[in-house]
Image (cartoon, rainbow, N blue to C red):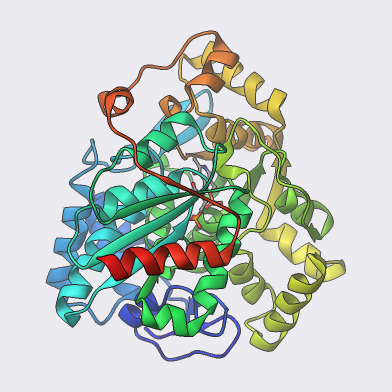
Length: 455
Ligand SMILES: Cc1ncc(COP(=O)(O)O)c(C=O)c1O
Ligand SMILES: N[C@@H](CCOP(=O)(O)O)C(=O)O
C-alpha cells in the first residue's frame, strides 16, 4: 500500500514514512492511494486483536507480520477487557464502549498502538522524534499515556487553558515523566490546532526538531479507529448498520466512512455535534463556515475547524487533489465553503446530522439513565440524542468516553456523580506540571527550542 497527500504534492510513501510524516509536507492530509475491499466472511468470527491485524495488514506492508501482531497484542493488553471495545445493548440501541483503555476515552484505541509503533519504528531506524499535538482534552492524555517514558521521544501537548474538564487536565498534567510537556494555551482548541499545523508547515523547523504527529492528521490514527466499526458490526449482528458518532475533528466518523468504502454495509453515518455545529450545518445545508467556539458540557467536541474534513473533501471531489487544494485555499482565505445541488445530495447519502444543545445533552443523559440504569458521558449523549432523532432501528452509538471524566455534567443531569475508576480518583493527590503560554506560534516554537536545547 502506498500513500499520498490530499493536495497532490506527496505520493508513493510507504506506511512508515506516512506515519512519521504526520501532516503531509504540502500541507495536505495523507490518504491511502487505493482503498482495499474486504471479504466480510473472513473477518466475521475474529477476536479484536486478530481483526485489527487483518485490517492493518491491508494498509501496512512494510512491517513484518509477526512484529505487527506483537505491536497489536502489546497495545491492547492495557485495556481492562479482552474485547477491547465491547458492545452492549440498551433500549434498542447498541452502545459501542470505546473507553476501556488507560485514559477512559476512545483515543486510547489508536494511541496505545501509536505509542508502541513509534517506539518500534524509531528503534528500527535508530532515530528520535519530538511529538507535537493539540487536544481538547482526550487526545492529549491518551497520547501522553501512550508515549510517556518511551525512549527517543519527547511529547509536547497543547490544550486550551481552563477549557478542558478537571479530570482531563489532571490526567495530562499529573504525568511526571521528563519527556512530557503540557502547554496550556490562552485560547481555544482551534487555536491550539492552528498553532500545531502552522509549526508542522514550517518544514525547516519540522525537520530540524524531528517533529511527529499524534492527532488524527496522522493516518495511523484513522487506521486504528477503522477496526472497531467492523468489530461492532459483527458483534451487533445487524444486517445493515447505522452508526451514530459524536463528532468534533471528524476523525472518528471519517474512520467509519473508510470502513464503508472498504465494504462494510453501513447504511448511514449519523453525525452528532454539540452547539459547535459547523459539521451539522455542512451536512444539512452545505454550509461549512466557522463560527465562534462555545464552551459546552462536551468540551472535547468544542471544535470549529474539523481537521479531517479535508480527507472527506478529497473523496467528495472524486480524489481530485487540484480541487481539494483550491477549496482548502478558499477556506483559509474566507473561513467558509458552500456545497449545493448534487454535491450536497452526495454528502447526505453518506451522512445525516443532528445537533445536541446543552439542554438536549442533559435530558438525554437523564432519560437514558432513567430508562436503562446506564450513564452515558456528555459526548456519547450527543450521539444517543442523534440516534433517537434519526429514528432507525438498532443504531450503533459510539460511546467515546467514560462518564467519570465529566462528573459535573453527570451530576447536573441525574443528581449524582458517576462511580470513579481508581485511576481517576487517585489523580487529585498527584503533583501537577504544566506551562501556560499565550496564543502564539512563536511562543510555542521558542518553548520547544528551549526545552530541546537544554535536554
Ligand atoms: C470524548 C470524545 N468524543 C468525541 C470526540 C470527537 O471525535 P472526532 O474529533 O474524531 O470527531 C472527541 C474528540 O476527538 C472526544 O474526545
Ligand atoms: N477531541 C480531540 C481533539 C483532537 O482530535 P484528534 O482526533 O485530531 O486528535 C481531543 O480530545 O483532543
